[in-house]
Structures are given as structure tokens and as C-alpha cells.
Image (cartoon, rainbow, N blue to C red; front, top):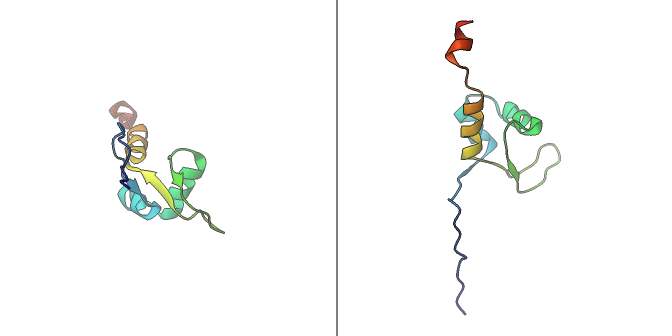
Amino acid sequence: MRHETPATTDVATDFLTAAEVAIRLRVSRSTVYNLIASGRLAAHCNGGGKVRPRGLRVPESAVAEYLASSRISTEAEAA
């Protein structure tokens, strides 16, 4: 029996752990969890945990969107 993987048109997405996101954003893991809880950073949960969800994964595109949305314009910097 042959097993074939279904063809998808979606671009492959790389997922990051909370620790990897924290390194990229230069913040603590707690800050990453707070950003996810507040809805400012999109994430997928692949498991459960007593204190914090285990298996949280953040798409690289969500990190890029968060950085773009939090950018300060040059006019705001001058004020």
C-alpha cells in the first residue's frame, strides 16, 4: 500500500517555541506568554500543562506581524 502526502498550496510555516520567540524579541518567556494570553501574539497549543500550556508554538509570521505592528513611526519618536 502506498501512502502519499496530500499536496497543499499553503507555504510551509516554521513554528517557534516561547523560548525562541523570547530570544528573538529580547524579552523573557513570561512576557511571551503574556503577549499570547492578551491576544497580541498568535500561537498554537499542542498540549496541556498544569501551570502553563506545554507545546505552545508561535508561527514566525506572527512574530513578524507583531514586530511590524509595534514599530514606532519617526513622527512619534520626535514628539
